[in-house]
Length: 117
Image 1 (cartoon, rainbow, N blue to C red):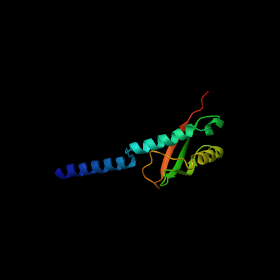
Image 2 (image 1 turned 45 degrees about the vertical axis):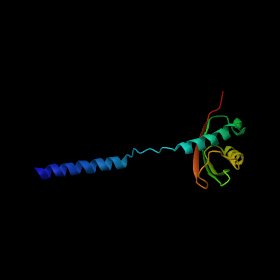
Image 3 (image 1 turned 30 degrees about the horizontal axis):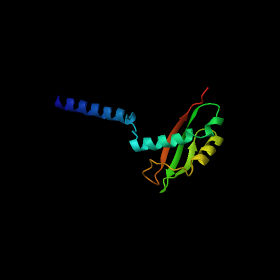
Image 4 (image 1 turned 60 degrees about the horizontal axis):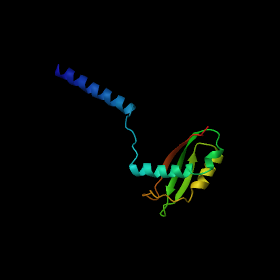
């Protein structure tokens, strides 16, 4: 009887482990510094005339680094049109960020925008 209970308990643990591995619930939590950095980058985008030519809202992800002088080096812009991507790269390259702490680290910032009616 004890063997049967132990076998059942082992099977239940293996089943629970398989289900939890197939459906991970761990979420990515951004640090306060990373949120501040993304917000500063987003404010640089919203202060520009780049988005005025857009006819609808959208979302882009900006892949960038910050050099030793705290200047942005945009590596790639994902999403949006080619015109928008090129404009964002030209506008953000060389801009100085006040909140950057880790230089030469890759950052990804999600920027959402919505056109006013």
